Length: 272
Length: 95
Ligand SMILES: Nc1ncnc2c1ncn2[C@@H]1O[C@H](COP(=O)(O)OP(=O)(O)O)[C@@H](O)[C@H]1O
Ligand SMILES: [Mg+2]
Image 1 (cartoon, rainbow over the protein chains, first blue to last red):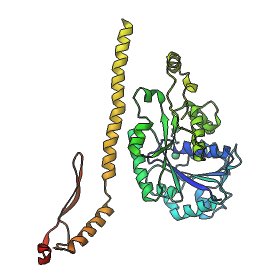
Image 2 (spheres, rainbow over the protein chains, first blue to last red; image 1 turned 180 degrees about the vertical axis):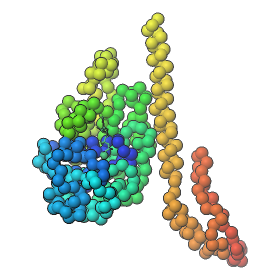
Image 3 (cartoon, chains in turn purple, brown; image 1 turned 90 degrees about the vertical axis):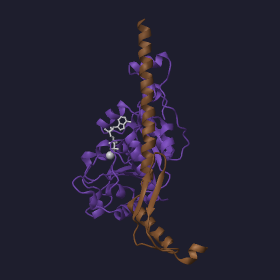
Image 4 (tube, rainbow over the protein chains, first blue to last red; image 1 turned 135 degrees about the vertical axis):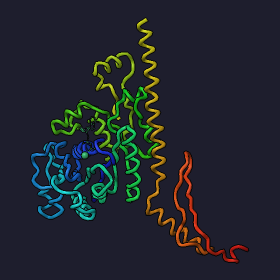
């Protein structure tokens, strides 16, 4: 059976595309699928360090496309999952050195070997974006609950539609449940109202994600991390499980407040 | 007494903070409306050519529009176009 090619995009940089790609890729592999993640951010390679594979790189995406190496030589096997592979971006090349056609050709080869082909898209809407979406049949849009990120997401939704990629799914990253509760931050309903897309999941802002990333381990491996749990749920939804969305509200009540003040309420959220 | 002051400050902060989410939402609404109404130059050109084709089925018009642009007010979008009619065929005027 042919695999699914999904692009992870956003328009704006720094909202969590690479983090999302690493975690969903890992999550799908943990569920027993064969997965390849591709970093298309040529010149600004990042997915390798987020996955902790930076020391194993020999060849990259451009090498594969130009035929300087065989496809399998350019794929790096993950440390923890033998069914998870990374194709890193080229670091010292220009994004115009590959074409949309070449990306399509590579992905159609990968689709015959893998259940999932995940494409980490660069920021922006120029050639790098076009290359990243060229082969995708589905799209995941990552945003944060901020005006600029949501605006860019809207723009990208329009561009995806023009490229015949319909019904993209939205991940709202870096939500701070406490702020949402106090009305300091837009919540899911505000964002869905404005963008009119289906929400795939919400990921809270989480210190444990940062410490996991420091170590090159996707946070989905961390059983105690709320963001990791959120990514697990998102992964299950992508994979077809019917997992309902949940509120990220921190537990109310006096103990909840005390814990919040003391920074102890990590486990007190329900995960989205 | 101190409790009361604390409560008042908290309440004041809360109303100010609530406004921050609402203003984010309102600003986004406006900006998205404007972004979505933007028409690309390609589309404008195609529209212009199609309109000229349609008009020339009924009228003899100048080659180019004197004005052809999208104008916006707070709530609505207008297409404003101006073209010189060189000839009004008799049969269009009567039927
Ligand atoms: N939910 C989160 N909580 C805390 N930090 C996060 C979260 N998501 C992303 N980050 C951090 O934000 C930064 C940008 O994320 P990244 O995935 O590189 O974004 P992008 O690929 O969209 O540019 C990284 O340093 C990452 O660790
Ligand atoms: Mg990135």
